Every structure is written in C-alpha cells, then in structure tokens.
Amino acid sequence: MIIKYEHHGWKVSVRDDLKGKHREHCLCFQCKLFKPGTPENCEKAQATFEHCVKYGTATPMWECPKVEAA
Figure 1 (cartoon, helix red, strand yellow):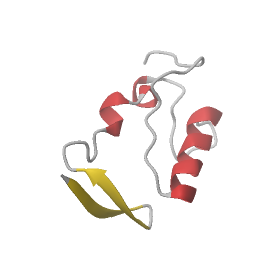
Figure 2 (cartoon, rainbow, N blue to C red; figure 1 turned 135 degrees about the vertical axis):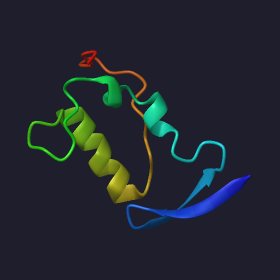
Figure 3 (cartoon, rainbow, N blue to C red; figure 1 turned 90 degrees about the vertical axis):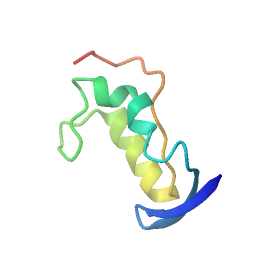
Figure 4 (cartoon, rainbow, N blue to C red; figure 1 turned 180 degrees about the horizontal axis):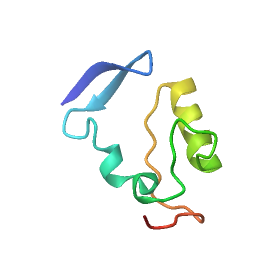
C-alpha cells in the first residue's frame, strides 16, 4: 500500500512497509565520517542529503568509496 506523509516540507508517497527504513539500509549511519548537521560531515553524505531536501526524496547510500566502519 502507498501512503502519503510530509518529509522535509514535501508531501511524499512511500510504500507503507518501507517508511522510515532508509536508515536501516544507508551506509552513512554506520560510517565514522557521517557527522550530520556539522561542517565536518562527509561531503557525499551532505550532497545526498541536500539533494533529498531539494527534491523531496529519501536516498539511502548503498555503495560508497569512502565508507569507514564506525
């Protein structure tokens, strides 16, 4: 089933079984370079986040050349 909710100021659609699950799959949340909300945040993670905010998407990082396990 597809549901709608507000995310980063956008009304978005998502499969209800996947809502909020991108963090479980995103490498960024397991990387020591990931420092959201700080100037030291990984530039790839920051650019991906800015893209998601700009376009109203959620994009988990599944592959990355810079990931360092936390």
